[in-house]
Amino acid sequence: MIKSAINNTGPDQVTSFIKSLSKHNIEQFTATGGKIYCGTVGPNEALVMPFDWVWTERAGDVGDCLGVKIAFFLSSDEEAMISVNRWLISCRKQNQFLLNATEVITEQNAD
Image (cartoon, rainbow, N blue to C red; front, side):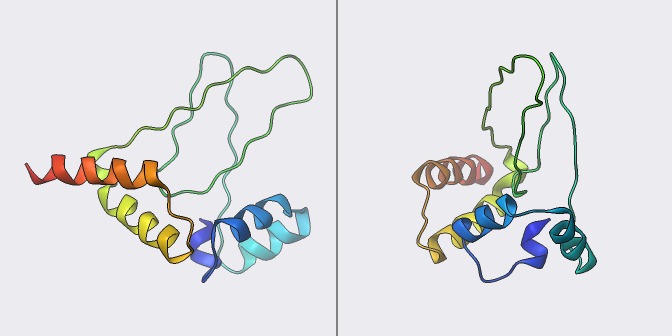
């Protein structure tokens, strides 16, 4: 996961890092403890990513591509949601949608 190898950085730097990935950069990243996973999703399939993972996507060069992204939160994601919120706030990139979702999950888990 990128968070383990890139410290003291914000969402803009993570985005730049992902866009700059070359074979050499990937080898260097994994050699320093970073982890990268690849997956393929076909027709009528879904890929569910852990809440606090950073991910990017690419559509193949052949055929048409139509997809839907859906955000959903599980009660078990509360700790990760709080951690990500703190990180975004510290980077001055607060996300109101995530803050609201975290409040709802926290209230539900309190019951």
